[in-house]
Image (cartoon, rainbow, N blue to C red; front, side, top):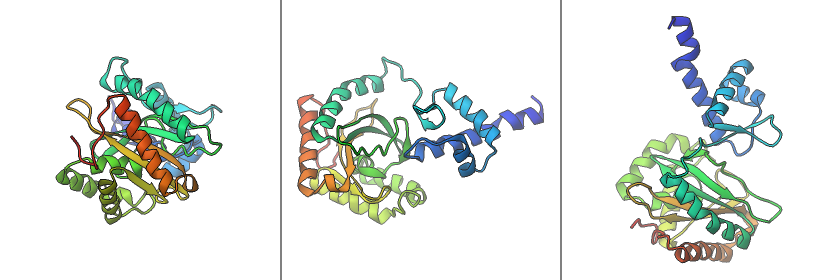
Length: 259
């Protein structure tokens, strides 16, 4: 490979592609190529070329208009642990979405990140689709992330927060001290409540689900406009999620402590 071709298609191209993917993963809405190009400071032709590669590999997909892009997740082997888990969780999430009217998210831990595995949309006219399937955020952002952090050992928790400290500031100017307080509240009540940080006017309730050797800790969360989740409704939504998990024989964590 020549020096020129290596520069065009080697590590530099990989880094640029990852910058685009990360930007899409952090976005809460579809983005057009021109908007992406401005945000990541690349030329439009470069962005078009890299989006074409990312789309071909299943890491991004087009929205309904066909003109904007979303972060996606490559196809999961139908027999994999995660595919089976999503299949098991889907009817639970559908019931929660029907009973609350709000969007329901299933996420998992990936080292110091949270990845959205699946979501179900409720019937209320206003749906807060804060996470795209396959989207990634620092573990600790959002109700699902707080619930999962609360299920980790103190050592693991501190390691994740230290590694993510700078990134938290990019998500609603979150500070590690705020993350710690949210975790304390989660462990005290047995479920997480996060509002008005990464997204203003939005509140979410989360429950951690115990993991195993092949599947690390995961979380369910319900997200809605702030006025749809007053204190009593938060408790009801948490109880609903607990009940659905118990009825399905899926072990949740107790007061944020992993079992």
